[in-house]
Image 1 (cartoon, helix red, strand yellow):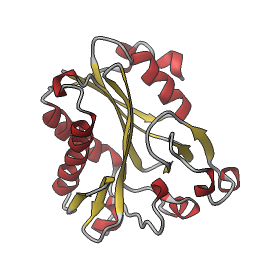
Image 2 (spheres, one colour; image 1 turned 180 degrees about the horizontal axis):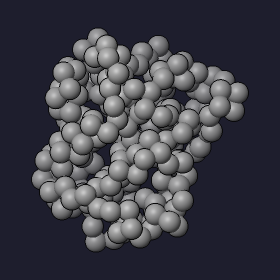
Image 3 (tube, helix red, strand yellow; image 1 turned 135 degrees about the vertical axis):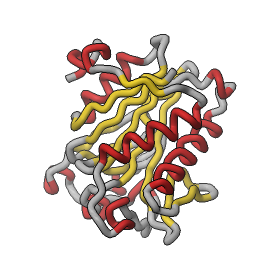
Image 4 (tube, one colour; image 1 turned 30 degrees about the vertical axis):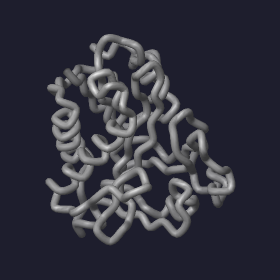
Length: 219
């Protein structure tokens, strides 16, 4: 079973606190949300990859314990945080990352956008080699936190103020840009939920906010 919940727009620090609260429980979770404007630094991030003072463009800067370099989150981007046990995957982290990539590729395909993973680079890319989905995770005691982000209808300009994921000359795209018409985060989130639950071999169950229990503590 994969317990899922759409949280709306949540500050990065609050979502991280909620992940920590759910970590180590008996259930697997998928939290889906948007963040206000924020740049996050992974454990391998280089500060020089942040090209402008984040406050000057209305964004926060947060250090995290996920893998990877610097990335951007903002309104209109779907962020997903699976808190799941890797025991059914025999603790194979690389296989889990491939599952995330495959689920995002399948979800984009259902929206008419051809996408793929790239050898040697984590994430999801369009046919024209523009990055549309990012992945950065943390694993402790065989349980995952952090996760993925897919550009749906968010402003892409904030990516110009960083070196996205530490990749020089990296071009980015969004579902809206690829389709040529405005796309909504909610319908895409539902498709991602279906694809990820299927890829993990779990049944997705929607959970009401009050049943999260820890949400109030995280906010």
